Length: 122
Image (cartoon, rainbow, N blue to C red):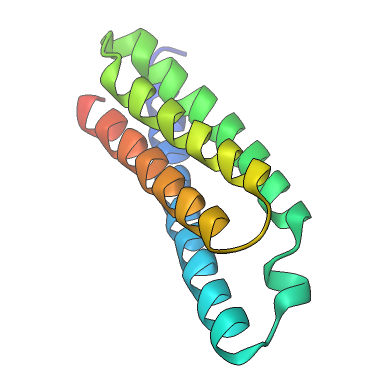
């Protein structure tokens, strides 16, 4: 059992980085398509996408980075990722628009950085 935990955590960290990158692309594309061309606003800016994304990011980061912090006894990946999740939560509070996109992009970048730090310490 001890050897499978790092494997699962590593996989979750990689999934977390990939989802963070997809979220970042979603934010940038949303800004370009909606603001620049007036396209896709109903889908790209749907609040449910952001709520589900935050929930998924919280679960994956909580498990992968939480287990990693316990195993390698380093708080930095956890603190960085939780700061990112806080930015993502703050983005939900400001409503749609430029501020939401900026807060989300900062948040997902920090969450990805937390996963990368966790992988390096693993």
